[in-house]
Amino acid sequence: MLKKAQKLVASSTVPWIIEKLKPTFDFTHKPLQIDNKQIELLYIKTVVNGDKLYSTVIKPFFEMQSLKNIEAYFNSLPNQQEVQSKDQLLVELTKGSVLIVIKDNILLFDFKQVHLDVPLPTNVEPTIQGPQYALSEDLITNINMIRQRYHQPSLRVEMYSVGKKVHQSVAIIYDEAIVKKDALKEIKSKIKDIEKDLVLASADLIRCLNSKKRSLLPTTILTERTDRISYNLSGGKVIIIMDGDSNAILAPAVFFDFMTSMEDEYHPYWVSKFTSSLRYIGFFSCIALPGLYVGLTSYNPDIVRVELALSVAGSRVGVPYPSYIEVFIMLIVMEFLTEASIRLPKAVSATATTVGGLILGTAVTEAALASNILIIIVSAVAISTFVIPINEMSFAIRVSRYVVLIFTTIAGMTGLALALIGLVMWMANKSSYGEAYFKLFIQGKNKET
Image (tube, rainbow, N blue to C red; front, side, top):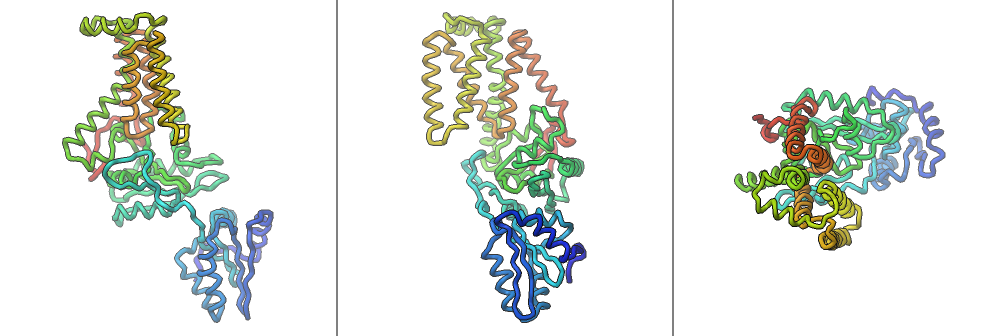
């Protein structure tokens, strides 16, 4: 029996589809006929798995005796899709589906040809222990990998489509028993309201989901790790995966989530606490060290030991401009090196940036354009930036330290203190899909503290 949703009549639908797709060279309209049996196949051959189509549809058609048996066989296939409208048929054909016309009825099957269904190695979030393979760029493969790690009957997968022109498939995955209902409702509403023509990546989808387009602090996590996904599912979070992207979106996310590495779950207790403390020290160093240098050298050198104040002052002998200009120039140069290391080919990026940084640091200090202590501080800031395990927060902190530097330049150590207090107040006043941004809670086992 055909599904009730399949109400389209082939006599009017097939000519309409042929008219829409005939101009493209890879569109195929293939009638099959033998004896008193006849069916029609419509598909786009460049996105269809030809071997699977032959073994599943064409070969059985010629082997079966009656059209009734063929129709019953087609309706028993597990990859049959529900037919809802003509426009939906066109979109599904472009994704790799095959339309079969039998007895003036329309059947739709998924025969998508996938070349990117191999799990990728973890590049963005590497760990010494734990799984070493990340998600792939195929949506079905990613859902399979998640289900292999999270065996709960309450796990739900809902499919949506985003982008008026690309119609990218998006899956929302959550554990119905423990999911945060308000966050789930808000995420679904925002995905349905997306009006953008092109949504090509998960990072682009995050921008569409963000109600405040110019917000600096991230409210979602972009991850490639299946163990992080399982960990967050067990904490009631919502997972969003887009077809064609090897990253998943985790929401809602609060500040402390961005400071968590999956290795914290694999190390002994005290080792995990120690490495976690290092991240928070690095976070503070990344934000405060440039401003602290300016405050100590230009405004309040008396708050440190005399020996240290004299050492800092002696290192700046011959520097022709104020400390805040010195810091700003060196931070910008450091940003250049960071961006160069990202954009250059991997074979030369490490060598080019390391050699460039060494030569530049030596030349700058010898030319008395910056102090030796500032070179140490800038190097420490650069290292501290990469201690933060999630890149979205790392990028936000890179921008925030310039705000802190400006406040310190204007008001010295008082400005530094006000800037840091203001940053904490800003985070405390922020929310992520109904969750307080400074909320302390444990993702695993669905506990809150």
